[in-house]
Image (cartoon, rainbow, N blue to C red; front, side):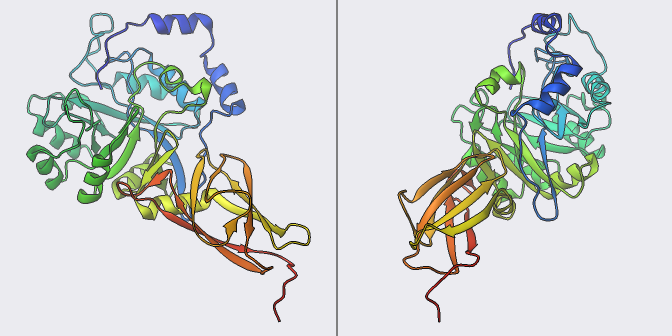
Length: 385
């Protein structure tokens, strides 16, 4: 989304304070709990990416190096530099006829770090089609054309992955309800539109999720950051930027692009996971594992330890299995911790099954995935013959 130009005074203050230098960023990356954590899933690496960011080379407030350092602090695997092609409010202070410049600066800043930097641009037009990001482009300059369909075709010629930005943005869509126009349908039909943001900044769109499902578009969640990630998303107070989780065969730019083109993504936004069932269910199952199960004293109350190796706080509603002891049916499994629950199977058994509806995950509007745990009780003394 477009933001009012703030100049570069903020950048000057940060540099003078010296708190955002590369060394400080690297130290913080290794030491801080702000690093976003999700496990790999069977067959794929889980890459954490933000494919929509801005700098002073369009309407952002920071130099591209800050975007790199923020990504390192958040433990991201990849970021895309997507400054506006047509909207250049800082041009009087930072003239740059080369629209690749923010990418080049960021790429140099990331050279000694384990971060994939992707060249991209935001196609900035009125509705339709609104705004779109073309990422994995080779050269942004040929995208500066009057004919918007020609821009999308040039992005396709360069092998770009292109997605619809903030379709719920009320500045271009007063209802906030994501709706395809004839131009969007043409872009999809011609293979010129590959994805859609189901989350942009602080906004989630159930309608955009349905559009993605109906038209086989890749789901994305992005920060669309213009200022500082820490301020916009209150990171010091436990917040986080929205990100796309891409399930890639390798941790490379090529594998990331393959994952995006194949639609192997999920979105994490404000503790909500969004994605197709075949992608978010394995992620939840990889995040939550039963670590231990044993009976309490001489009773038939079974205590189960569930470990969560992700940054999501999972909200689980029991659908099947023994009732809880001292709890209601809905529990929260804290992030990066082990949560213990007690079950009442009624008698000592060697195994039992628990099924939960995951309330903080959606795979379609108002539709939550269900995950099942098979719980074995080692060395349990039972009444079995």
